[in-house]
Length: 280
Image (cartoon, rainbow, N blue to C red):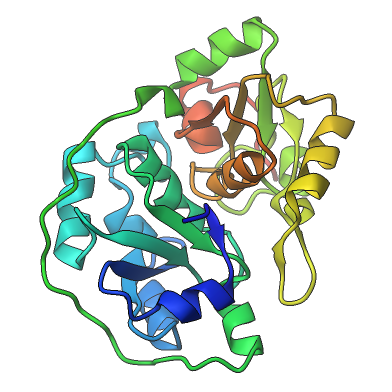
């Protein structure tokens, strides 16, 4: 199974016994609204995954807005949703790649490779006239994944500091206005990690409904910034969610030394109180 799959592929395999489609949704600090997004329409048979409740460990602001769950908690939560051993997972969302890639990256982190992201999300699925459902799908509990951790895929703030000292590449996936510190709606300080480069998520997609650029286009975009496939590259965003889309694009472009700074800007400003600036 490819890392990014088409609507045609999903339609063909939707009824395969080992396929689980997961509709991811995130509304800032509002799991009820995320669930409403799911009920507003999803790929038939898709289960609901709440980024806050299922793929994060909300609570300690010092670890950022979306701290990672432990691998043990992650596999238990997913098993209760019907995602576990013997399953192939397709992550999707309403639009294109803002949050679905978080599930892809977290599964990669615990050693699971049978996971893909639907190119174009539900928007492309509907644009092609394919059916949707507006009721909840539940699946039987399954045996949790065996954990084969890949700790090198997730970096701490200290890791990021070390890599910046070595001159390695750090990419900021947020909108350029947030990178520049001109606006900040979610975090208490605006700006970016000194030494980071800006590659906003919107530059990775094309078309309407939006879908990911081709591997060749993505590679050319990265190479134009002097970023080559043999270089270690770390991605971050506001809280370690949307940066996973940037990692997905890097993966598609053939970049293989890629990591996530999971705490991202929201953790960085807790650990570096003078970073960025307060907007008035």
